[in-house]
Length: 297
Ligand SMILES: [Zn+2]
Image (cartoon, rainbow, N blue to C red; front, side, top):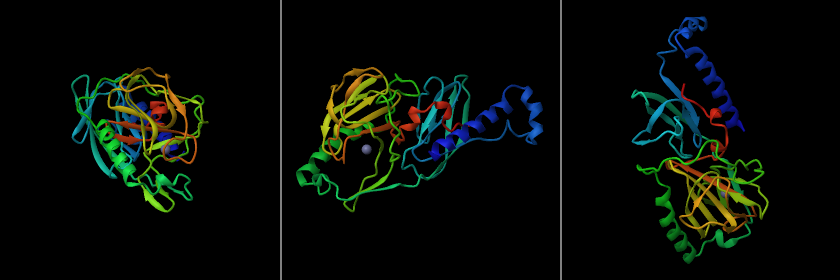
C-alpha cells in the first residue's frame, strides 16, 4: 500500500506542477513560490523497481537507454523491471510536434519481501527430478524468447487501466517480486502477484490480444500468456483448466480458464504477471488509473 500512497503523492506534485506551468500567465504567478526556474528546471520522475511511470501528452516515441517504443494514446509509459539496477537514468520522448525531450528517471530499490514455504506439500516441486528439470528447461526455451523486448512491437490493442482478471478481484497478496524459499531452499523471485480468488472462478483476459502460450508447464501449471501489443504481455498461472488455444484472438473480459492450483502452489489462487517492453512490473500498476502513476514533471 505504501507504493500506492507514494504514487498518490506524485500525482499531487504533478497537479501542482501543471498549475504552475500551464500557459503564459502561470509565469507571472510563479514568483509567488519564489521559483522563477520552473519552466527551465530539468524534468524528472522517481520510482521504485517494479513500478510504471508515465510522461503524458503528445508523445510520438519513447525511449530508455537503447530501447524505444510507441506511446499508448499519446502517453509514454516506462515500466521499470523488478530487478533494474537502482540509480539514475535518462528517459526521452519525441513529441508529435517533433521535439525531443529528456528527463531524469531515478530508480530506487524495492526491498525484497521474504516468503518461506516450510513443509511445502508438493515435494516434487522442491527436490526437482532430472526429467522435470529437463522439462522446465524445454518450456523456458519456448517461453523466454516470447517475453524479451522486441524492436518491432505490434500496435497496442489495450487501454489503461486494463480489465480485472477475475470478478470480483480481491486485494493481492502483496508478494510481487518476493524472495522465496521452499523447505529452506532459496528459489527464483516471484515475478507476479497472487490474488486469493476461489477455485473454479473464471479467469478473464485483462485486455484484447492474442494468446501466445496456452499450455501445461511444470512450475506454473496450466498457463496462459496473452500479447496485447505495445510489448505488453499478461501471464496467468496455476489454472485448473484452459478455455483458449495458442494463437487465438481474445477480447477484454473473455474467459481464458478457471482458477486452480496446478503446478507449484500451496492452494488455489490466481497468479497474474505482466511484462511490458520486456520489464517485469507489478500488475497493480496496470489495474490502477494511469493518472495515479508517478509522472514526469
Ligand atoms: Zn504466484
